[in-house]
Image (cartoon, rainbow, N blue to C red; front, side):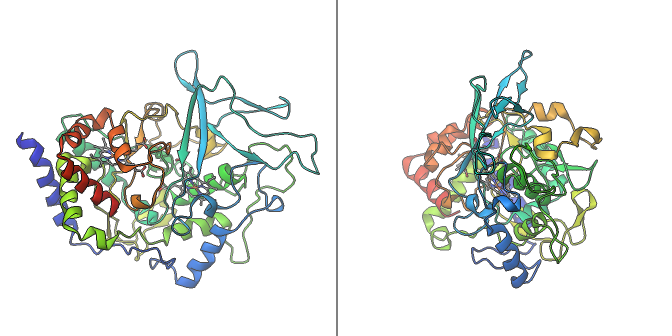
Length: 433
Ligand code: HEC
Ligand code: HEC
């Protein structure tokens, strides 16, 4: 029994250490966290908010016209209720395979991606007979929705050293007697061919770099090619030259503005009034005591100024350096019994040239082993989300908690054994995040 209480004591010791670092700025005020001035941040936000049209390169296949369409609550860079569709099936050897989706009366087959786009730019006046909408084939028996994520504060996550995540995985595995062992997955940095880092973005930790993610999202959500993702998913109905995203007069492409916008956002602020109540404070203690904090880690610290990131293509700026922030996540992959069975497609996320490059530390078996794992959902700003868990299928905090099985089984059992007023206190704490 002593061990049960050993965990929170250790966690407190870690907090005390971290308390020597200044806090990352928080808020929903659209102001920069300090890496650029507010005027530059406003220019970057305008790019993030911009609605793209067919002449800008939108599509041919896409999900929405603007980053903000899916990242908006309570302000640009937040999350939304919008979810997208991913499918696949098991091949002859039981391995996950991406769907093959015929478009244009079967004249072309879309392969190599698990994402199924909901929209397309044709049939249209220019291409009245070319119907390219993607639909889930009956063979695509593995299906999931993935709800949009919060981006606010992600610059601090990007500036956290790989070693922090590797250490967290080791520590939790040792402390919890191998019951809870998160996976740190090395993923390609698209802008640094051959280099990898520990994945921390996306429900499956598919990216480590915000620039890589911006290019991935621009192509896969909006159909806009860039220097990092130069190949269209299909060339049917395509009329704009590649890459669609060309540098402006300042030398920056849209993907550079998106990445800088996200890097300059402040972290989600807590509900200060609620957080100060005795009930929410008691809930915070119970959250640690029952073991939620093993995965939903309260405090992380960024690297020092000048530390190279993303394969040496970026260095930690002074505004982000040596800051503590409170994501309530370890950003590691876990099997909590909710897995969607989907293995991330390499070419979809890292580009069609992915296999012609040798990537340091990249392990295909490690990717395949994560089929049923999901990244610990960061709980900062969770009070602002209407649909919870990767599939958005849990609509209350309580529903989300009781869905945790697998690695979290014992923690969920401890939660279930709390008295009803204690459960209510823990939920009140979550409502303050
Ligand atoms: C159609 C909705 C949609 C659009 C448009 C969209 N996103 Fe997203 N975004 C999502 C979803 C859904 C996820 C989670 C995807 C996953 O992991 O499978 C996500 C995740 C992200 C993440 C990872 C955040 C984290 O903390 O893990 C980043 C960064 C991101 N999007 C940036 C962008 C940028 C930049 C744009 C515009 C180029 C954009 N997104 C456009 C829906 C969208
Ligand atoms: C073994 C690691 C682990 C433990 C322990 C754990 N969680 Fe989670 N939590 C996760 C993962 C992984 C997800 C995402 C699962 C998914 O989307 O399918 C998640 C998701 C959530 C969400 C949904 C957040 C969102 O934005 O969708 C909430 C709320 C949550 N956890 C609260 C808790 C609470 C409260 C406890 C303790 C009673 C707890 N968790 C214990 C790993 C863990």
